[in-house]
Length: 305
Image (cartoon, rainbow, N blue to C red; front, side, top):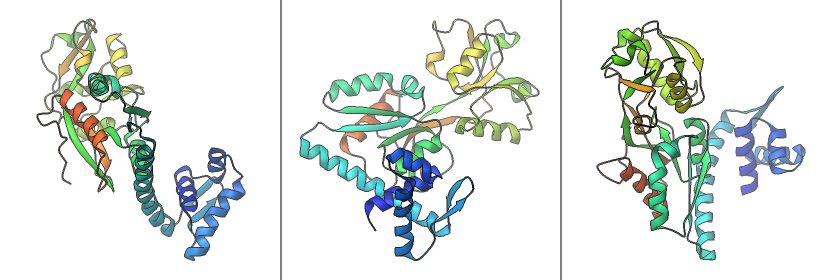
């Protein structure tokens, strides 16, 4: 059993396809299969089940997949740190988040951090969902993930940094624009712009609406919060979104954000690998972002679960 065997096995489980991993590694499908078969011979168990449209891990395979993902992440993190020490480099911090999060939550913090640590490289990787951010963390591809906080995830610690109240975004000329606030009953049968289907914010909003007996109609589905705001400002619908400071003021003269005080706030913050201490550079970046977000304590607080 080698590290390469384990890496290839983890990639197969993640991709669900031998051929996809072969393309990723620029090798043959047979070579990928040999890595998996070597593990199966050594363990005496079948680890992946071949299906017409790919492969899925067996029960034994899922156990190994979880252990490998956590273990390889720590090993890769250590090897990267050792390599930076050997080369005498200033180091790097790898962050993953959604496409618009850097602008909304990190722009001032990035400038501040680069001023304080000019030799450090900041590497940002864009993911399409919190789930893919968690997978990148577990695999050791990143140090930090900025996510909308949701249900607990095995091996991941979620640390809240900022709480975002919900608002109804409408065009300035909309009949609702003169309201001071929006009540749950106002959303009944409303035609809304839907947040991304696979997002934590959408799932939490749907859960709250369901518990409240509210049944709006989602006319349009968008890829991110910014697109929902743009459509609302153009008068093409109403959007229930978390309130972000960038959407208020002279930059959006045609937009009105009406508070929804009955909705529980949405929490956003850092996700890290549980039990794997952050490097001093990564911790400094996490603290800088938290400080610029107005957190009373610049060190993100652990959410106990």
